[in-house]
Image 1 (cartoon, rainbow, N blue to C red):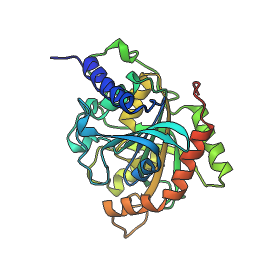
Image 2: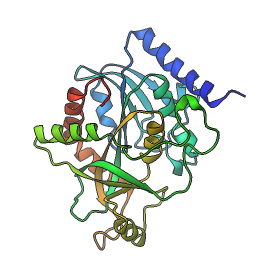
Image 3: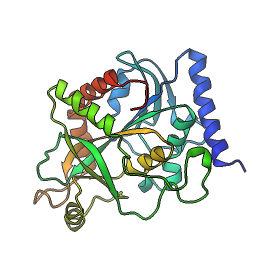
Length: 283
């Protein structure tokens, strides 16, 4: 049986081979497009598109709003790898499988990982359609994507999480939003396993703990990227207000996708501006 490192390197080699075949350079920046946000990949120029199902070791995305395609090309002339969709714990995958692609990116030399998601608003100052820069996160689930055998190839077993969301990248995102005259909140993202939406009591508890938004992704990937020494930027699209924040409302996935689509203009503009300002050097 092959080791995890061998599986990861096999997937990385496949992506690199496909890119070489068509002469597309691999970027050192990657973005993960969350629920309803995959439209950004359609704007990429000269893109090589690889279905996840073709990449060795990749799981299958079972969420309807996640295309399950890796696009390698440029966005407004800037090299980029874009993942249209991700994998979730609630799909039945363990955290190690959910974060497999992050280790693949590490093997491909990616230095900067932009993680985006659709999230529920906990902060009562938010409204659907707002964008929130992730400053930190709360994960109450005891499991970890780094539980188990620790291969030093991917970094230290016991690693610091103080600046998981790279401060310089957060400042760059704020500068980008200001340049575009876009409103960009900043706050704490809370991870919940799903697939059920949270109860009003859970949301009250998360608010007491300092949470501003809640979702079912991003945090496992941020943990692995942090261990691998990547710079991480997290952006949430607030697609609904979480249970109990606004009385008499019920949450559904169609609303999440619809509101994410409505924010496409602002979201695309912000990401493109960040990429324009992003330098190859470590943030």
